Image 1 (cartoon, helix red, strand yellow):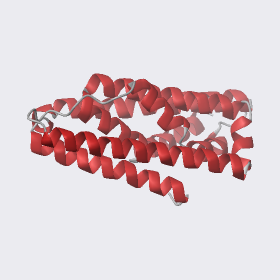
Image 2 (cartoon, helix red, strand yellow):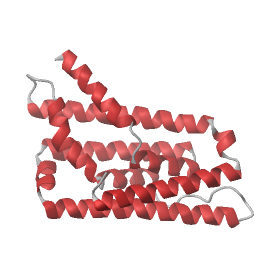
Image 3 (tube, one colour):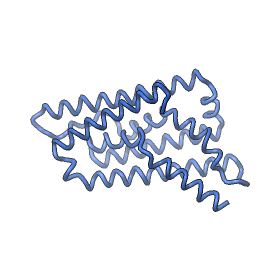
Image 4 (cartoon, one colour):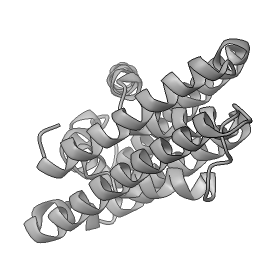
Amino acid sequence: MLTHLVAATGVLALLTVVPGPDMAVVTRRALAAGPRDALRTVGGIATGLLIWGVLTVAGLAAALAASPGAYLVVRLLGAGYLVFLGVQALRQNRRAACADDPAAPPTAGNPWRTGLVSNVLNPKIVVFYTGLLPTLAPPGMPAARAMSLLVLLHAALTVAWLGGYVLLLSRAAPVLEKPRVRRALGRTTSVVLIGFGLVVAVGTG
């Protein structure tokens, strides 16, 4: 069982470090409001994973994944939210470029809620938790306990990875705070968020 759990941890770690919407949302928050808000966003993302974990253990996530209509609603809401965040970031970046103060304006909205909503509306989590996660469950362990363990492990890996990423960004602050660099990264992050939103909308990612 221990060997299986180690292998499952490796798979979860690999999936966690693959860049995706979560990293783009955290990057946007870090650039616009600093590491403290970015870490709160990470907390919201982890909470979203735990919510999906509870729904998965209860069987509701599988029901959602099996319902084309319900899944489509979640997918379109998630896509719309990512596009909204990207457009919002573009506008803030443009205002910062036009303002006398080169610093980016404060990002609107609660950072924890931003992370939570972006993750709860991520349809890929539904597919991942109902499709791949059960195959990683240690044999001989009750299904509910195994799934709960894997969800907690995934959430912990996500917090460790994104939290470390935020700390890395904070250490690079002297470079990132240069107006030209900040504006370039802001535009890039905005486009990435919009791109992820479009990918989610068409269901090809």
